[in-house]
Amino acid sequence: MTSQILAKASSFSFRNMFVRESGAAGTGATGAALVGVGMESPDTLVSFRQVQKSYDGETLIVKNLNLEIRRGEFLTLLGPSGSGKTTSLMMLAGFEVPTSGEIRLDGKLLNNVPPHKRDIGMVFQNYALFPHLTIFENLAFPLKVRNEGFREIRYQVDKVLEMVQLEKFAQRYPGQLSGGQQQRVALARALVFKPKLVLMDEPLGALDKQLREHMQMEIKHIHQQLGVTVVYVTHDQGEALTMSDRVAVFNNGIIQQIDKPEILYERPGNSFVANFIGENNRLSGKLVSQDGDICLVALPMGERVVARAVNVGQIGDEVSLSIRPERVVLNDAAQAVENRFNGQIREFIYLGDHVRIRMEVCGAQDFIIKMPTSQFDSNLREGDVVPLGWAAEHTHALDPV
Ligand SMILES: Nc1ncnc2c1ncn2[C@@H]1O[C@H](COP(=O)(O)OP(=O)(O)O)[C@@H](O)[C@H]1O
Ligand SMILES: [Mg+2]
Image (cartoon, rainbow, N blue to C red; front, side, top):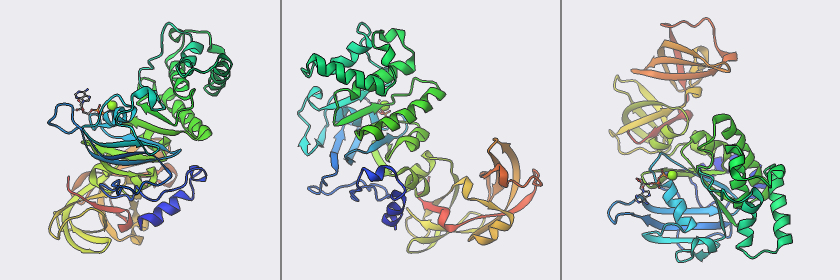
């Protein structure tokens, strides 16, 4: 089923015209990134095989990381602070050594290759430009250390300056540019020597919201234009969904799920992913029965909910149900879905383009419904008890939290 959804989703993807699906990774379930040894596809640029990392010899910060990064893709490592994203990136860049396991770039084992020989560009949150060199000289630097001639340097630096729209600033020093402009220089410096791979670790973290959103689009467009492979690290789920072809969701040094943004959102493989990405209503219950992909869950007050059996245990085990706020329908529309209840309205939150309604539903006090303002029934009042419901298709039965 997942592969059908994937195939369907990918046919809409612009990037798909350039990046062929290997079909190997990203089946959507917990631990799905596991890849059989010796099965590397020609589309693979980087592979992590059973990589572990401990700084103190006791605690594993990265636990058995298996990950294939495809040629030309924009892959984001997303997860809370401390989940091992930077450590994974630093091992790929060569600044940290794996405690065990292998990392390959283009099939070649990287373990003993020093950072400057890896053909990888890097962008960090603190731009790390050379303050005493002009923008031109900063950008020329990676080409000089690669022994490029002056003409070639001039040509490549001009080209990359044009790409980040900083042609006029070539003779300035970093201190004479704004934060956003400095970050563009850092981006240009990571790209100027045409590396196979560019790594970015929270590069927009220091910018204000508006500039950050602008730069997200800019980086995404540069990626599309160049077709370079990007591995991007962020803890911001909105940023990850906006920019990426695929997202690997990290928690506790483990990839929880790796997939296209729309699959992570619509088909979370476990409760961590459901809660970390997007907004989510959670109901706890016990598994009553299961028939293939479908299951029945009993809530504490006896209500029964039909759900997709995504990540459930045995009959009688605790289950956490996940329902997105925009998938809940009110009044007449509720008659068309499998799960129908009554809910009491507690509060309206008006947000311009949409309205959020906080309700008490099946014992949950903070059950959120989200609907476009254009569909909102203005006769509704706080305290009203209204029929509501949601489809089994949009109800994910997951591991208990
Ligand atoms: N050089 C280091 N020495 C010891 N512990 C470290 C070092 N770098 C990171 N850690 C620890 O490893 C864990 C993961 O860190 P990190 O990979 O930076 O996570 P993230 O980038 O997801 O926030 C954290 O608990 C952090 O304190
Ligand atoms: Mg980090």
